[in-house]
Length: 91
Image (cartoon, one colour):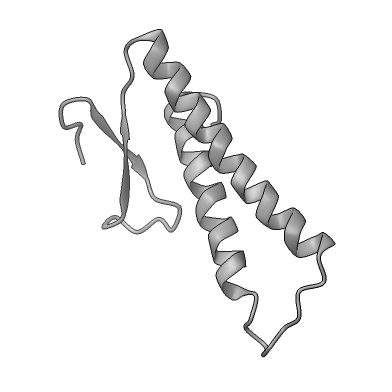
């Protein structure tokens, strides 16, 4: 896949050629700060959810009660990693 304007493809984590994450290329310091702040916000949200699961005794109604929270943590952390990769912070 090739770049489209300011959007640059990043390989998806599954290795499937069909799945691609596009990152917006930032050009100004303000855009870079905004991208960095977004990554930090997503990491903070994932951390808060993770802390809530480990410190609060949430009653499990069934075997998969906590799956939505775990999926949210996975999505937030994956998105944050993608943003950091786009900024060149993570390999």
